[in-house]
Length: 547
Image (cartoon, rainbow, N blue to C red):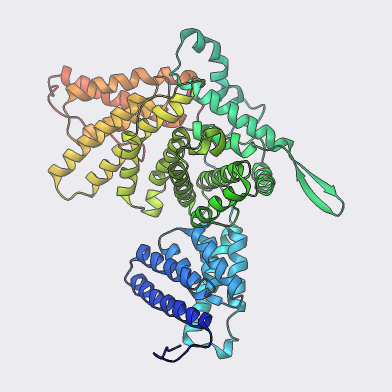
């Protein structure tokens, strides 16, 4: 609408609408230019400004969804695309972007439904333009991927000993339980036995809660009836030590999904929105309903994301498992900042430093482990590791169990050093300069060894990463006067860890390491005794595990 100076306006409201729509169009055009230039974050910001001017424009929401997809913020993308389809149910592109977001999150049923909706919104085949044909191809391809993944068999790589099997009593948490009184008497509060034992108690409480869930028919409807705080205890156990994850039966996923629905409905958790939506709605809900309503809603939402990210990675389910952790951290760091002075009893434990460190630790390890598949940003891994190391190291005070400080303060720093060791090794392998690669290997070894020695002497991670540190030292051509004593340390450390970890998922790695280290030590000591080498020479160590 054009305004003519001096001409009275019959409807000021129409003028205001026209002006805001014009501003929205200008901002949208700027967002489009930024998007096509690959500046997705800036584009997202422009679309957000445009939406404030014209919130009923479906195209703006769909465009912001596209920016969110490009930035791998899939929960936000699904939210924005859903808003676009609410405003315009026939908007094929919006349905397609919703389908893409769900596909990348691993939500196969939602993805299938969205892509089918997208296809149904296109003109009939004979009337398709070139643009529509391209959209049709995209939607059909996405639909095919979603359907294939839905029918895909999931795999579970963790060791699992069925009830009554020969190894059941020898699982790490069982052995730790049998040693508990001994550890207490020795005042060995840093033992990994306490770490895995208290992780087990939390996780077991969660499993008991899952088994208490019942589906009852009330009237003509089926309703889930069960305990609450089950998601809380399951996630607490995994954050204490993810090695605790095990399934007592084959129905774990079905029970977990029902429990998740029960708690989400009871506490009105955010089941469809991403961090952007929650950051907008949570303060409004707080003002209206208070912490009694908001605290459990936020807790269930965040813990659900943590569990989903963990389970997707554990079962090797395609989908953006890392994004659930990054989105959880967005909410946690935001909430810890804006509610800094609110008592824990009101805002909840999820905004406490220990909880945030636990999530960061899981996220860091998942980023590193998925790197070979996703080729995510190496610098992101290094930055997160350095953050964990740099954070205040004062141990918690008050009434905490013996495993708490290790799980949320010591182990995150140990994991961070190990991941920095991995980072520098990747940098060394990519360096075309031999001298630079040698220096990087030496830095890698320093971090691996520092991380390894932060784990308790009876934790399997100590010899595992001492061994990787030894490999890095050998790559750096370090003299045998340094590497042979380290080999001896590894040899002596492995039997200590077997008291608890003899039947862990990584036990075969320990056995292989012991064999490799013994061969290394025996060979080079024999060479020195025969006079063919000296302690100032360097040795080679055959790589056993993929780090």
